[in-house]
Length: 146
Image (cartoon, rainbow, N blue to C red):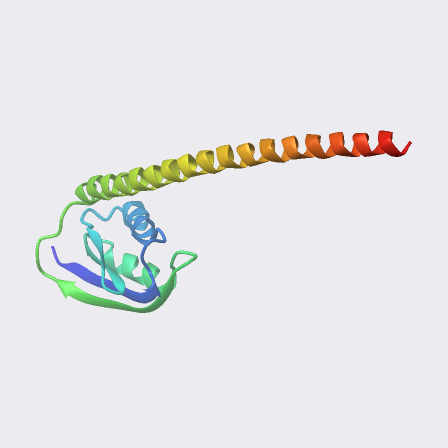
């Protein structure tokens, strides 16, 4: 079965959910073969199946909200194309890896915030002590003059 190699080029086409958008479209059109990957300044995908022309027409017209697409290149592709299920599995695993890293960053930030909060509370306690001393001095002065 003849497939298509599609390259979507633009300033903003990565890290905005574009491959997920393309995957959902391919799955909705029952495209049986579909790997997609990020390349320099773009996204490359291979599609195989009966509705590849419909798929190409759609992605020429539609894009994700944040995408800035400059060009969509399409050419025939004769090589073997992986099944869409294999792409889905590897894509989801790679996204989970990103979430783990983000979660670790959040935990580190949280630890830093806890440390900063402790320091702020210590300074606040010192300020309250100074305030109490100042109030004591003011009372002493008031008793002296009254």
